[in-house]
Image 1: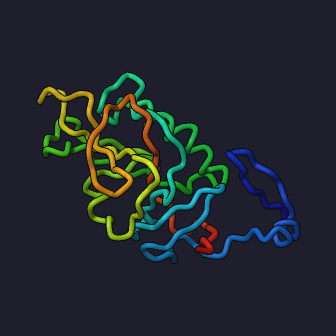
Image 2: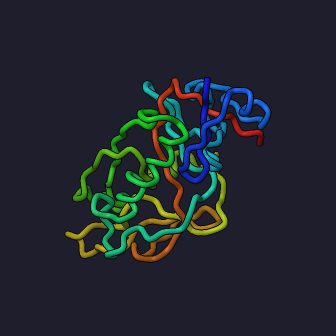
Image 3: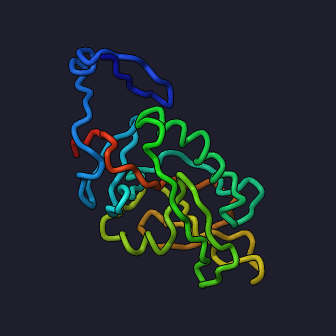
Length: 202
């Protein structure tokens, strides 16, 4: 039976014997991973934040790249260029490695840091952490080598703020920055429990 690996989103067919010789194997179902455990997808390491009824909620344990939150400098995630990229090109990369349907839709709460709910919520396959999620899981989320985005706006348009988004600094504290700036990206998503993944060695 043929298998495949993905390298930067490109699929390469291998036989089972070739995969064994290369040390490539899927050793666990995603739903068997515990909070704080990590696994690899196409050279990227992800950490389990919580187990849910339909899957596991995970975030990149290392920043995957640097990008603007929104090329037009707007702080509503629903309209952001980063959202479009993560749910198209980046999702395709995940599905190449994990299989179509492995990444489940999730609700993303866009409540601003000051509590305003003007931006509502949206449904995504891939998003960023909210500040609430970051605070909840701060005990296991490691500091990163550069500042990185959350999905949470500082405030909203009705309050006179359209161009500030909450970010996390290298020491783990939170400030804000303009959406058109370049910051680290730590994608978050829900992975179907039955998906086979490779547990990280670390």
